[in-house]
Image: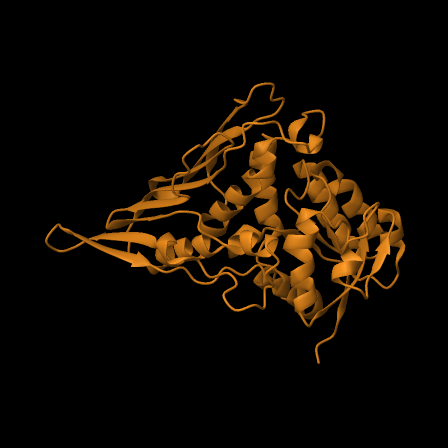
Amino acid sequence: MRPKINVGLMAYGMSGKVFHAPFVHQNDGFNFIAVTERSKKQAVQDYPNITSYDSIDQLIADDNIDLVIINTPNYTHYEYAKKCLLAGKHILVEKPFTATVAQAKELFDLAKEVGKHALVYQNRRFDSGFKMTKEVIDSGKLGKLTEVYFRFDRYRNEIGPKLFKEDNSYEASGLQYDLGPHLIDQAIALFGKPEKFYKVLANNRESSKVDDYFFIHLSYPNQLNVYLTATLLAADIPPAFVVNGALGAFSKNHGDVQEAQLLKGMKPSDEGYGLEIVKDAGKLTLVNSDGGRDVSLLTSPLGNYGELFEAVYQTIVNDQPYPISQEDIIAQLEILES
């Protein structure tokens, strides 16, 4: 039997209920023992053996908790992460880790000082479509890569109810801090820190106080250009992944089903979890020896956010390197903060 890590979850809204609790509960290396719920006590209905605290400070003060998952609004991440580390807890912090590079460096230094791990939740590395895109790139079938396009688009013309995302008086607000960490992290996971970058922000919705569109151009060695885009006004969602190379091309829509499945109550252990539908297959086009095109449809591997939680476990218990490095996060924040 594996050593157990006792886990506390800071909030049980959508992210806690969908992206965290099911994976902590299913992993035999974790004990899900506590949550913060200020008003509605819903978590105990789903997980009867946990303690539901009324405040975050009560959760942090629980000496039985080894790891705290910080899934609160963006502008609170730095404050709560620091409190948890000073209380002797490991932390797993949702994106964005912090609003600034200086805050991130301070937390990483503090974690080292107190002998704890400060880890960042970048779940989109474990999406099915990204996994497939990585496999194609790693295979070398496309030859020298020339341009890569990653997109994360939605259509939400109205101003959302979450003020910390929609009001620029809160730090780390706007679309670039909401979806930007996903796209930048995916690029860094594949290609590392760019040599240089160029960024455009815009707010297109009526009365919007924050950016609801961004475009980021990342420049890499060997003339590789990576383009990251997200908008809240895409009525017709384009492909999420497009990769062009000297020998071929690959394109793929977003396709990952995990969020939709979890919202419907599906468990990560259920049959079919993370399995894309057939029509979402990726398209690989290779130039053949006659100059023609060989086209094939590729089925993505299973999406599985549980892999991230297993990586968290291995890092804390067995001191294995965490796949999302501190250097990755600093490079991401340098772009976001600029």
